[in-house]
Structure formats: C-alpha cells, structure tokens
Length: 386
Image (cartoon, rainbow, N blue to C red):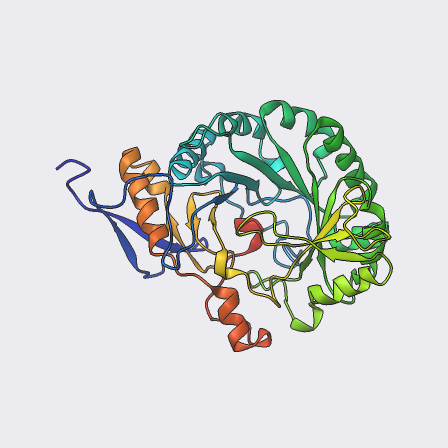
C-alpha cells in the first residue's frame, strides 16, 4: 500500500514517558489539506509556533528548573533524540502552510544549542502563503546574548525577549541560583539593541515575597529605553517548582504599584491572541507618552486568556503540545523519521489542531486557583518553553 492509502497512527505521548496507554489519532488521506487558515474546535486560528531547541539551561531558577530536581545527575535528552535543524525547518515550513506567521525559539536556554544561527538562517528563509517573512523571535535568559547578538541578527532573527527577574544583583543571583551577575544580562540587552534585535521585550516573573520589591526599580529602569517590560504572574507549570497561590502577585496589584508612582493608561491589544495586557506611561495630560514607552502584564493565573489562544508548542524531541499546561503531546518525530510525506504530515497537523479544545486556565479559574486546576502530570516549562 502507498502512504496515502494506508492508515498511519500518531501516538500521543506524555512528557518523556512513552509507556502511557494514551489515545491515538489517525492519519488518513482525507484529512484537511493546508490552505493557510486553520481553526481549532473552539474557532481559534493557528498563528504562533513555539519551538524548544534544547532541554538544557545554565540557570536554575526556582520557578522553572530548581536545583533539587535539575541537579548534576538529571538525565537530559541525548543529542540523537533532539530534532535536527533540518527536521525543525521541515516541520516549521508545514506549520507555516497551515497558518503560522510567528515562530519563537525557546528552551531551556536556546543559545546553548550549538550553531543555533544555522537554524535561524533556515527559518528566516520561510515565507507565508502570501509571501510574507515570518516574525522570527527568540526568548533567552541573556547570559550569552552579548557575544551572540550580532550573529543572531545577521542570521535573520528579528527580535529577542529576555528573562530578567530583578535589577538588584543579590536578588538576581539568588533567583537564577547559579550566582550569575545581573550586569552581564544588561550587557546582553545593550548588545541586542545595538544589533537591531528589536523591539526588545523583558519578562519578569513576579513571586510575592521574593522579588516583588523589584517591580518599581524595573519599571523606572526600562522607562524611556524603547524596551517593553512585562510582568508575569508566577505560574503552576509542571510539578517541580513548588507553586503556591500565596506566592502569586496578581497583575492588578502590579499595575497599582507602578501607577502609584508612574501613572499608566490602558492600551489596545497589539494583535489577536496577545497574552499581555498593555499599559502605556502617561504624560501630564493623562495621554500615552509614546516616547516613555509601555509595560505589559501577563495574568496567567488570575485572568485566563484561553479564549483566543493561538499557540502550538513543539518540544526539542519533536512532540507537539497544544497548551502550556498540557500533560500529553503528539509524537511528530516518528513521522519525520518514518519516511512520511509532507502532505501526510501536514494533514496530520491539520487534524490535530482542528480537534484542539484545550482551556486549562479557564478550567482552573472555574475550580479556584488553589485547587491547581484539572489533574494530570503537566509538562515542565524547561521542556516546552514559556
């Protein structure tokens, strides 16, 4: 039988646990063909693809890769298990045919992946069905950015998002838990701006009682710099970070704290599916002072934004996840390495997305944040990226 006439199966697999008896999804010739527009079961279009290129990181932030779990004996994925750059690019091309317009490279720490510039060069050559280039971005902890910024820009990267949880050096060293100095991350931001990797965004995860006193210093520092600072509620991603609701500072409280010193005005969303609520610094007339810039808040715990979520996530070993809080993923690597045609893989992607109904944050909100939401062993942020 030919590939188009014989049924194939995409197994659904848990986070690094292929032994689970989980549902399967068939791959058949009659599945949807790529047309650049693909909606899920709740009418949400596929638009963003986040690709994890490594499960390794040189930081040990407590909310992501705490040392207690990710120690020197932690079994990271062997190189042979990772998708190659060519496999990533092939899948990305098929996703773009199905409507993806934005790709974000994540980790772990993506700049630890050797020759990452080669992958960026391959992805930057992709075009949407209408001939437009992709919005190609990368999220990094900034530790290697000073030395790599120019090469990343030359390879075709558009912009970067840098994780930075405070300006106080002692606080920052304690949070990354590897004694990495904040000055080196700031130098990376300077290098990224000089290279033209912008507009740059800085993400600060806020943990009450740990770094919430850094909210105003961060706002003061990045105002008037052209860098967009975003505050992220401490999330219950995975099972290793010891998440507790009492450590969550609601975004509304973050906004109130900043507004008390630096008046803010609400701004319209920049695009459908945007996770951050935008606020601009106000001028003396109470209008947005565009020269001063803006901030954002990502209310991942207190305000669910599942309703227009348009993101899919690809793990470094080729598993497709439809939600940041998922416990299961689809094994695409077996298709890539099984001589499956582009048409068949594309049809599988279409079928998977059309059946998507994930809404973890809405369900958690309906149950109450302290409940932890729906059950299941959720994937770790370090495995799938933020």
